[in-house]
Length: 104
Image 1: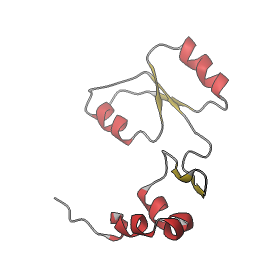
Image 2: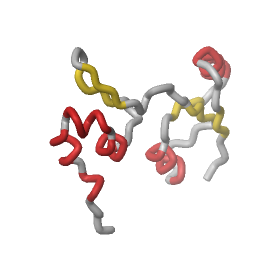
Image 3: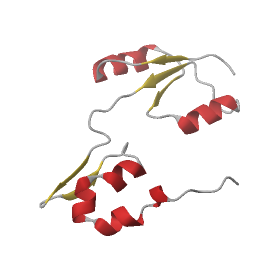
Image 4: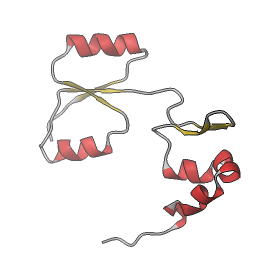
């Protein structure tokens, strides 16, 4: 596997500066699928910028907006969130987290 650099900018401005200055730079958040592509040699960037997004995994509820699930919230986070269990119990019960899946 080709070596690559992972950068973690402290601000959006710093991330934008890196994107503008470097060639072959990609943003990642999580990156599991991207790492598979890198291992297979399908996609091999020179530099990755790891973006940490504040509150992206938050799960909130209010009577005006309803339930809001952040894009980085895991299924377990949703299933176990008190606001989901209180206001959307069928959603919490319908998620597959409690199930064990056999290996194929």
